[in-house]
Amino acid sequence: MLLRKFALATSVAALLAFSAGTASAETVLNRGIGATIGTLDPHINFLAWEGWVLDDLYEGLVANDAGGAVIPGAAEKWDISDDGLTYTFHLRDGLKW
Image 1 (cartoon, rainbow, N blue to C red):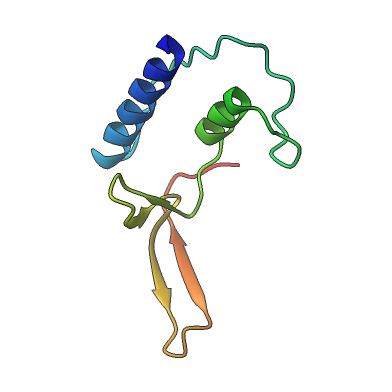
Image 2 (spheres, rainbow, N blue to C red; image 1 turned 90 degrees about the vertical axis):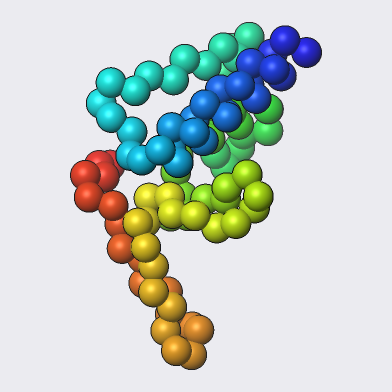
């Protein structure tokens, strides 16, 4: 139960940090998972605590806010063609891979 409360608290903290603007270089997220990570390969992951770490590592083009609305993720904005078949994502400055 304590682990669930911690996971919820860190998820809420991460969401609040995201909604406040872009993360600064000083932002640190400490995640207590209580177990050893078996894999960080998102294709074969099936454990909850590995999923928590993967959620922290990877960011999609868009995300969802607490109400389920689509909000910017790695993309700061996007355009949809008139026919609805082409989506053009404009990435945030400073992203690195």
